[in-house]
Length: 547
Image (cartoon, rainbow, N blue to C red; front, side):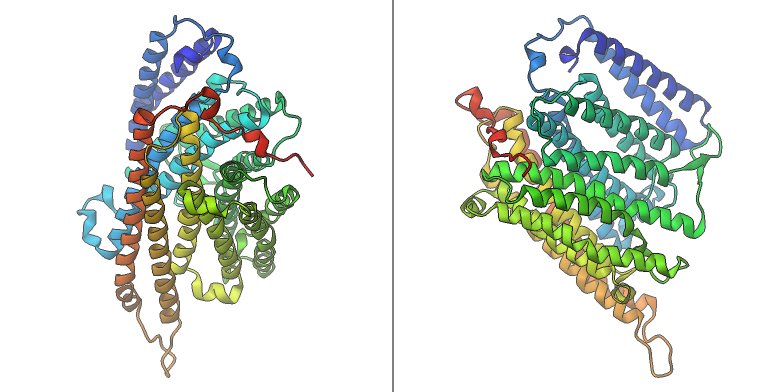
């Protein structure tokens, strides 16, 4: 890592690490809360370890000028490994959380393993740890190939990747210590939020600088989606996390918003996090890796651009559909419902574009599990966006909201769309990045696919059933006008479905573990290609200019 940095970048790395070490020392020395003390010590320890690593390689020969003209893939390789590591960690906690709902004693009577603490560890681990690292790694890869330009800032790329993972680490350890901002999407401590802003600004700057120095005149559509993901997530993060810390020595803070304004801001953030973190970025992934793997051009480049602008504009207005039958003004609720229904058009445009791209390549889908991951992800994307528009309708929402139906909907998107396209992109790029002929075992890829698909179907079907039963039980009245079932009755009725959910999650986790093993074996033992030119397909030949 250090050997690939120029002398100036090594000096900058020393300065950054010294600043971080000093900051960690202040946090550990002046913090009055357990989380702040712990995080200060953690930042200090990691910074000192980084300083030793940089100092050790500081006087190594600078990289060869010819090397600086090649693609810079080291952060991408590290990002893929980190993504798979976070996948296993996050999914393990997900299975644990699901099992807790079926067998509550599995918290072992400890405050650190209570549902309220390990549930945000699960969500942050899979969404931001797994999904975020997959997005960063693949965006670095796609940006360079579609621009025919090396990343402009080597130190900046490492700063983004490692700084982002420091944020994830601060978040999950903070949750274990019982510190969040008490929002629907559990938010980490205020100082972790500030750190992510710095990391994200550098990420955005690197992307723009690289595109500005591209040798390819056309900006390929995948970069549009990645840029929307980077830019809008920055806006969402800053606005939703506007808060005042009690003091610089405390990990507690108070939100700038309150009441219904806070609820609307939270769901503006929450649904646009779905839109631009869990949709836009992964559509960028799909629009590159699926055509390249299939050996087919995108069915309609024009449709991809139209879908981009439709998704970018319409998603901004839909968050209020989470607040039907609340104190939010009726017209705002109706606005969110209306845009949610209209949003189905650009969403299905992207799903259809992906599936139509496979025309003439369905025999590859049959034989190639990696491509099948991508195909199934497009199917789940279409199904989930239809369900999301359907659930936004006020009369349907009155049945589904606060029930497990919503949980099933979320995981149809998270497992069937986000995770499937991520695994497909990772399996496609690992042989290219490590200069291997193929994955070590295609049978393991096949096993991972069926475990992932089976786990997703079991999970989602169980939650559809439990959610609808919950909604019906909660709104069933006796002839005298009283509730026919108590809340405890509905909880007892959910027990078999919660067991099924835990089993589905366990299947999905098992597939992720198999994927990690296969990637490790590919890096260590898979054969190299016969010639260097065969290590990676000529992706540019599969990419269309604008129509």
